[in-house]
Length: 514
Ligand SMILES: [Ca+2]
Image (cartoon, rainbow, N blue to C red; front, side, top):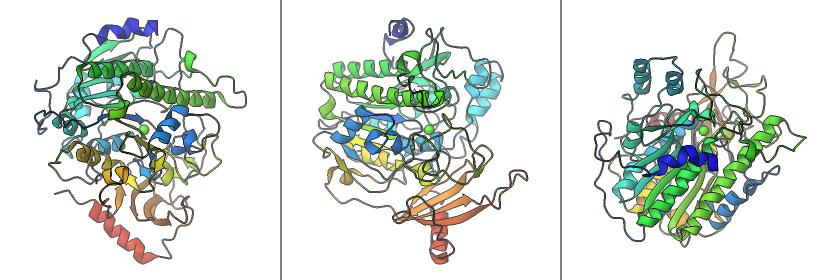
């Protein structure tokens, strides 16, 4: 840690200079509400947002090969939502989280990798700017989670993998309503854990011991060198210092720690390679399991720090994922699961050692359950019953309105989400969605819609599709999730009326918000 402080400690003073508020950094159309003092009973918020994780990756949901004791403890002290849904991949999930809207209405992502290519001299500044702006005017966000928390009087901060993606800038992050931010702006750079530099409130901070960007993707060693700095160590130190500072100032805070873990390619620091002795595993599996250990350790470090600061009783802590489990970091892609070329027939129980999907069909990139269903654990002492669980099917776009309800903020625009505060506290009537909706841009499947236990997916017909002919054919498949949680029995041909009803709902879900 001494080495880390050499490069990182310098930028801790002053921690998070307020460069963003009121200095014209907000994109056109973003209105920043005046900061008000929050009500005394308003809790602090810390969201730990994991990248590519299924419930099966956690021992509290059945992982047998490694343990996640700190995340398990959070679950025992709070509530689990086993039917929580992110989105198929990173950027759409983050856009939904930050705006409270479904994929039909949330901001469209731009291109990833632009910053890495710029730093490597592969594109010009002009090409970079053009790429960042790509598609942004088509569907700009109207209201953001950080913006909402700030309007309620919170100091807002964001660490790690920043923003919606795929390439961000300091101005864009500030526009989402974050007073302070520290991490990486480019989702492709986030593939690696040894960046050449990171950003702190728009200031570039070099990491001289890490490899230089000299190509379109970052260097991703399985195990880093002794002189290299693992990015998560920086985010963790920054987040802890931030919490200390807010405690000293008695500032209410709303913080998101968007960890890069356990996103692939698998990569770990030598001191954290805790499963290096598992001879029965491949090297990738040893590294992946060590990444999960690292993730659990940082959750433990943050919750312990809240304890030390005396903040745990008045802080909502959430641990959640963005999209489903991903096998690519440690499993070769088989011919039948060729997601790269767009032919996807599913992922089934027993295909990978760690079974992060709990046997559910699909992984990241798919609208099947394995791609969408992610962990969600929330702890709020005195408000949420320890060790409780809710079966409610809850989409990520319910988070923003839930915090609006907790903070007493009126949302000024139409959104798709509904507050789940009644579910969390057992007080009041829980409103329910007419349907849940996802659009999928990866090609592994297309739209998906859930009504009650019924799920309709426009999934790829692998018999009719042809990679050679570059032809993808989709069909509407219908599953009953209560009776068939593995989505193995397509009932579409037996229930054409229900299929047609749900296809109509998909059209409805895609109508613009008022
Ligand atoms: Ca992700």
